[in-house]
Image 1 (cartoon, rainbow, N blue to C red):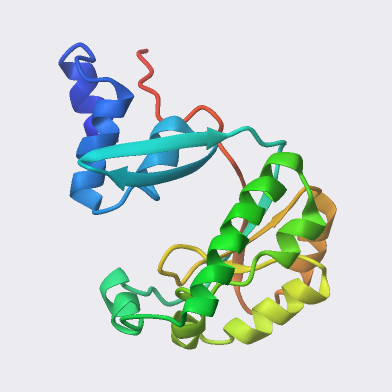
Image 2: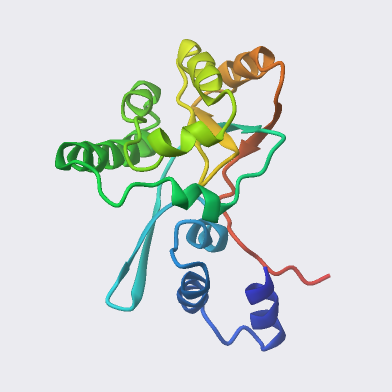
Length: 192
């Protein structure tokens, strides 16, 4: 928001791609800033001093964010990550990421559920979120995926239909939740 406001103040001299590079340098990675700038579901990475981002063309997905009453710092969440993971888990993670992109683009709930097994951070960070296993089991029982959102402690479930998320929300008796949607437009400066 600050970058967009400053850029607007200076007659929008920087493109969103320029802002993405600057924001990625500040954040350290483009995972959050790319969708914030461009909207939608973005896949991004850094290559040789550049940031490449591609916005997936997806149907409308609905989300349910579960918000524990305790915050989890990114620094604390990074401390529990291992320095390396076994090759077999890395291979499966890459396959899951490719399948997830396909599931999101074609609106395939079953495929999304199948490829939502994380090997990189969730097995280590889940212990930092009280009752994570309980929430994940409730989501899986409702035939929905559930992930730790970023470093946590918020968790996210997605569905191609709204009704299953309303059912899942009703089963969550001890945690705050919010229904969320993907903003397709991304960051905008509106003059009034």
